[in-house]
Image (cartoon, rainbow, N blue to C red; front, side, top):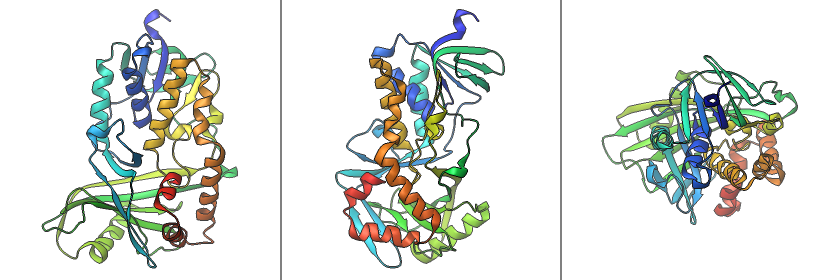
Length: 351
């Protein structure tokens, strides 16, 4: 292996987690001497996902937010509340803007190489990453590829699967100063189902249905729920569908970090960044990125960066996930009780 194939850090995967880490390293002057390789078989382009997250104050990507709201609605058959979020804001970021911003910075960084190759195998002990054309080695490898050998049967697991439409009406129909965080008024069908509405302005919004279960719909299934929801609860008038999105988010208390070994550390969904009880991931990816960079700067053990996913936080998530998975208490009642009896800042800290 020649000198050009040896790096200090290899990042496998140029998705949300990999780009966040590469971008943070590119921004950190004290790491400019680290040679970094970012590997993926393709470049992320287009709006393939929409991230939403809570944040207190101005964040790293404030300049590319699609929208943010200081108020949210919670609705169910029993309650309807409009809640002020201060000191938090609910923020929406479209992936295309994130990809463009981070990739521009990464490509300008003299110490980071971005190579388009498919990763075939990672040797944790040697730090050698075997790709379709050649192999590379590093002192540490961060991978967003799912670890092999995962067995969920001894852990809580359910999917949050969803379908969403970006819609445009001819007239004003949305309160664009508030996002609908959860609306449980749709038929539950023995599952936990809710819709949410993220208005971009008074005429346009992302309307999405989220379902907590392992019984996935096809696209027609999500589309039918959305069409009925819009007619019943948004506006019974003509609208255009501008874009559609569908996806699945795994919600589990599985300890992904136990697959870290030798020089290999997992990040993103593969590292446990998805919050088990709610499916939120983007903010947790940013928090984990900051912890990793702190370890790299100060020579701390990288294992310590995973503390944010463990301890009492994981216990609370596991309790909530267990309640939702067992379905002994309807999700509508669980969240209605939370939003009726608990201060919103406490709920947001948990979510």
